Amino acid sequence: MCFLFFVPACLSAQTLDWKAGMYYFFDNTEFGKSTLTDDQTMTGVHLTPELGIKWENNHGIYAGVDLLKKSGTNDFIDDVKAVVYYRYADGKNTFYAGAFPRKALLKNYSAVFIQDSIRYFRPVMNGLFYQSDGDRAFFNVWLDWTGAQSETMRESFYLGTSGYKAFGTLFADFQAYLFHYANTRPSTPTFNVSEQFLLQLSLGVDLAGKTFFDRLDFSAGVLAGLERRRNTDNGTWIPVGAVLQLNATYKRFGVENLVYAGQKRLRLYKQYGGNFYWNTPFLQNEFYALSKWQIRLFNNKQVDAKIGMNLHFSEKTILFEQVLSLTVELSGRAIEQRKTFE
Image 1: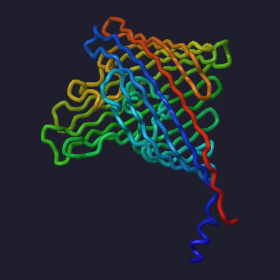
Image 2: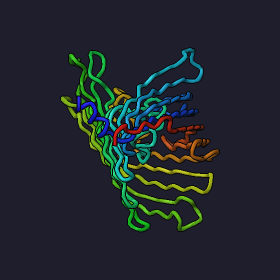
Image 3: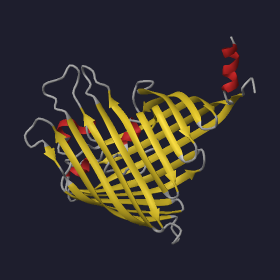
Image 4: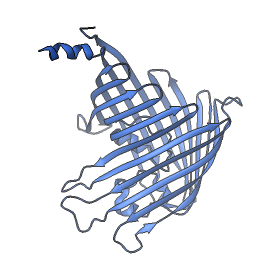
């Protein structure tokens, strides 16, 4: 009986929090001239309500749902993803465990790693994420379990890490991940266990605050990788290439440029497609350039709206893409429950 009175005395103040988000996307790709990917329009809206309990200011448990309604379909809701996770944040360290929103956690990964459609249709990470932030520096490591082994689904997961460190106007950064694509249970004889590994190492110059641009940075790096399909002849490829990036922002206007030149990648794309590759399909060529131009229509604590045009240079032609996004994020404190005994 004494134990029942002792437990509340050990508990700190608890706060019931709530979050509500909406994310609308319109992405029209005019890729009809390409032989590497499909021409399509992706459009829809996500609704993401969450409730959580916080304690000691740093700890929290949250539960909610991500509801996707694709534009033009007859279904009331096209996809439902559960959101249940623990979060720790103390200003320097951030840790997630469970099923949590992907959002900006991997925003430093470019299209050579993760293309935009992953945010549209895979908004929830299932696994772990840890990041340590320092003085103009960060380091993170993460696990995203993307396939639970069953009779019809192959076991699959991403294991990644990235980091950044500035030295005056110079900086160094890296991004990396390993994707493991296993078999079903029971195993299917025609399925081969496969992996792909990507690593980009870059050096750059950050001139933010040195010119009239709000953001101005340039970097050059090496993109190395390994793609393997086990137990097959010539089943391993180790492509290498160079990546150049130039980003600039002035007030509401921004441009992001990326160039890849090197060996062809995505050797298994025809067999596995997006189930195995989350990066842009244009890496099947020896040269690819992407230029994103955007105007920020709204940008405050609650609303972020952008409209833009992407130019893709591939297969000796220019391909166009029009993009519109609107993000609304609200949060607040509903009830604060304090401990009964001091």
